[in-house]
Length: 334
Ligand code: NCD
Image 1 (cartoon, rainbow, N blue to C red):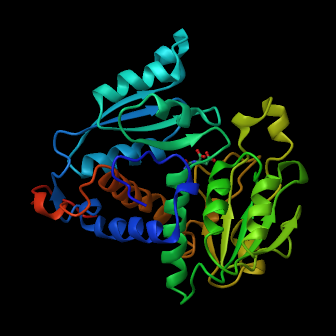
Image 2 (tube, helix red, strand yellow):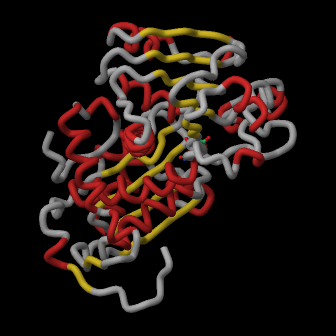
């Protein structure tokens, strides 16, 4: 796959070679993200960062990734502060913003909206989440994290055991991650959710067709001895009402006591974040914060590296990042 000038809308665009390429570039970004060095390779370039749904990590890490490559960020957040709320079409917004920008990152509550927007765009569009459909950059950073975390125990993605827990129906991160896992071999997947929030059938079929071993359950007990436990939040915003979401909150909690009792000593805990820390939910308890296998913040940090790599590749500068290096004059203890 050649990335230059391409939209990144779905994980279905990737094969194993292109994933390896993204991860190689992402690793090369570490000194810049760690403020050891600067690069101005994207000096003069503008990212249009359009977030029509709540976001902290994805929005800010797209912006930071672009800034760390030397580019500028212009941002709009929230539907109500955009002309979409005046009835403007995605096509028209895309036509205009793509003339102001060199690349666009976009999140929108409707499935398929980012692809529709991309049709009107003259610059590459990166999907930052379209409804319950896909979240390709998150899936790549999740996979990057899984590879890194497993390597510490001498394990690989091929042959691993991952348990995905929570809202597997509306969780776009588990949808995109599962589709990426179809490119790997001999994975054991345990899918734990309330029956009503089960992984969509088409994704289950793809995983089975990829030759993976699936266990589907509506109980957490007995399913935590995996290499990776990927916990998720009940996606309240996709339910008809808060009360509808409330009935599923707090069903599958993981805390240190449960971890000690049921997980392996090296089970890696992941979560795309935000974790819902309200008492009635609390799917990942704060008492895990000092557990060295809690990878959630390393996972979020990896988001910057992977998004830097995707910007470098789509704008065709991945091989010249070093040529634009300069010093970091400020104090940094990163
Ligand atoms: C996820 C999302 O928005 O899909 N968050 C993220 O991008 N890191 C998951 C969530 O909101 O629960």
